[in-house]
Structures are given as C-alpha cells and as structure tokens.
Length: 307
Image (cartoon, rainbow, N blue to C red; front, top):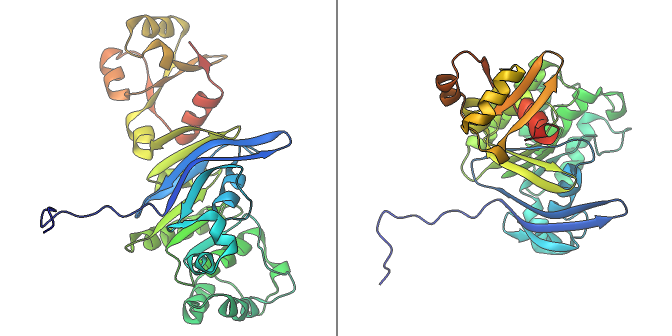
C-alpha cells in the first residue's frame, strides 16, 4: 500500500537539466555549467558576446560533444539526441530558433512548410500557414530576400508548428521592431501557458526579458555567474545614486555586507547596487534609489567595482 498522501503530487522533471557541463576549445571553455528549465518557465539566458551562450545551447541540443558533465533535454541525454531513435523522437518536441535562418536561401516560404512536413511527424501545416499569415510573411517570397526580422518570424513559425513542448531561442527577437517583438513575446506567453511547456531564451535585448522571463541566468567566460528570479532583480533591487560621502556612509553602515558591495564610479557620482531598495530608502531617505533593470544588474555585477 502506498504511503503517499492522497493529494500529494510528484514534481515533474525539468525540461532541461544540465550539471557541470564542460567543453574545451582553444582559447575558450565552458566550465562546469549548471542550468535547469522547469515546466512553465521562461528562462532568460544572458551574457556578453563570446561568453558561452551559443556554445551552451549547441551542447544542450547535442550538436557538439561534451567533454564533461551531464545534460538531459526532455528526459533524453544530449548525446542520444544526435545518435539514437529516442533522440529523434525527443527532437520532435523541441522547437529551435537560431540567430540566423537555417534553411537554404533559394527556397520559398511555402516550400519551407512542405520540407518540415517531411522532417516532423507532428507537423501542422494549418498552424504554419496561420502563423505565416499572422506574421505578415509572403508565401511566395524566397528566404534569401527576407529581412533579418522576417527571417526570425519564419524560424519561429516553424518552431511553433510541430508540437514542440520546449522552445530554445537564440536571439529570436533580434532585428525586430518594438511592435513585432511584443507580438513574438505574446506568442511565447501563450506557448508557455500550455501544460508541460517551457522556454529557454538567450537575448541581448534585456527589456524583452524584463517583460517575459521568470528567471535570468548569466554566463561569463564560460561560467554561470548568477541565476536569479527575475522579479528579485527588477522588483526588489535598486541602484542608489550616491555622492562620494553618501557611498562611504552606506559602506560604513553595514546595511550591505562588504563582500556584496558592487558599484560603478562616473563623473557625477557613484552607482551602488542595493539588494533591497525599500529598506535602503527607509534607512537613507536622502539618497535617490531607482529600480534595477537587468542591464543595470549585468553592468554592476560584471563590470562594477568590488569593495
């Protein structure tokens, strides 16, 4: 007889689960990267160019072999994604958008749908045609004549048309105007609202992540440097705009542990990372403190001074 309580539930396994993944190249290494994406999450993946975002994504898709660590996507080991029939079945449920359109340029948009129908058993031509119309794509237009933004829309239409449970997006909103980016973000919200779905989204446009992400993971020089709930950054933290005397008073007060002080000096003062802007404003009412953006946090974390 089971001892499990009648109303208890078993937590679903993460859709992405990577532990200590390592890949060495001349001059660069992924170094012990841990990354998980749970059901119902949109995880923003950020970092400077060359930090390791695309290498991590390729490793998760089984496009490159790992030198160390383990990773599973939709319950399938990433090595099996590229080499086994079980991996092929798992890939049916992974929608991928890279930062360039990965289909031959001479093909017309209408031909892309027919090509994907041969590649995916769950391909829905109806869904693809509907998205092509809604994204304002011309079915007779060759891929090589698409703008970067239109190419991203085509790639997203393909990713959303074969029954994917997981979307892995590499700069998917790059090249889109603000209204088009909002349209794509709405699609992602609809996607992740369905049971069993999740999104991993790398982007340099952190304002998009502020609108949509549940968590933000940052990689720098091949290592994860932070993994935070997005609202902890944008709703709780702040940037104090200090004069030199203000900064010294805050540092001496102990309200921020010395090892946690991150700041940037500029010509008109010092910007200080504040873990709790509400408590800070109560303690130092004369020092202006603004809400934190993801860009602010990246700058202060990666480039800021350490006390």
